Length: 168
Image (cartoon, rainbow, N blue to C red; front, side):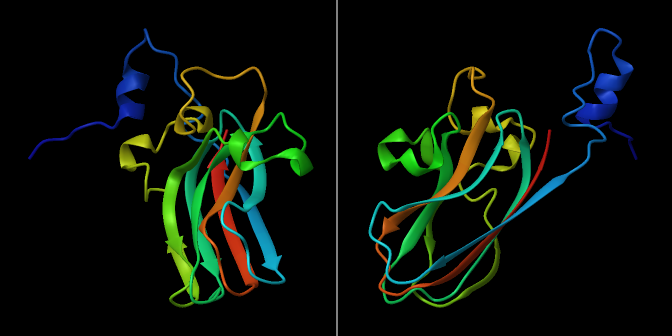
């Protein structure tokens, strides 16, 4: 039987590497995002959930929603954080489906679904938000919006809750 080391312990043993404290022994932050749609949502509606640091490492995103009718789906991705919230439009997206694609909200209520790794696989667990958003380098602005974008219109309103966990 062998003993093997994770990336954190391997890096600790190598004096030539500075430990990335964003991956090791950090405090997790939680954003509980709630939105109530009073009626049907049009295709390409953008629901800004929260603003997170561009260097955030997202560990979990849990999605809950009411049944929003006979049609309806959402993508989960990123918009630049240097735009005023009321001015963000779909054309501003860094990557509207970087984390999840076509989350179905029309067949039934979604009681608790982990969506963090639906589109971005487990090898991205320690990637910074700017990298998950498809940027080739860290942007000059300090935050990004995490957002739902309707990829298909809903036919009813209802409640949506998204719980985001991340480290810095």
